[in-house]
Image (cartoon, rainbow, N blue to C red; front, side, top):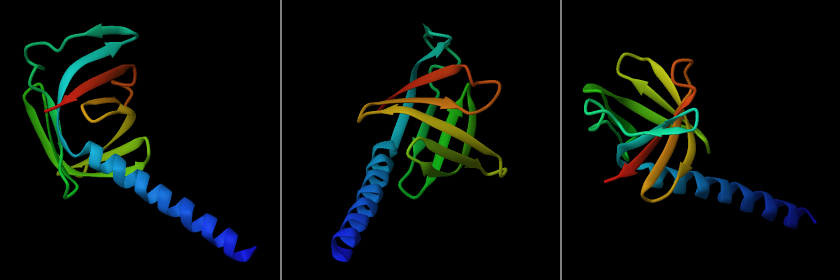
Length: 124
């Protein structure tokens, strides 16, 4: 009985590690803003926002551009649905991962100002 329990625990731990690695590998790459939702209404990015992106690197660094403003720093996966972005100024921003496929990313920034906006990105 002890061996079966130990095997099940090891299996669940390895499954959890695999899903984290799989999610991390899906995030790696450059994601460009496609559109965003505000209270269910979909909007196209403005001309100023049209080149906005997030680049997740394998070495756990990120770069981002928002309305022409550049940010960079480190990122980490907190849980299956949360990503922390830590900028060079030691400011932290929590990102909630709503959906990810090989080509599309849907996130929400966990801030008062952006809490009601859902961002859709496409990978290039």
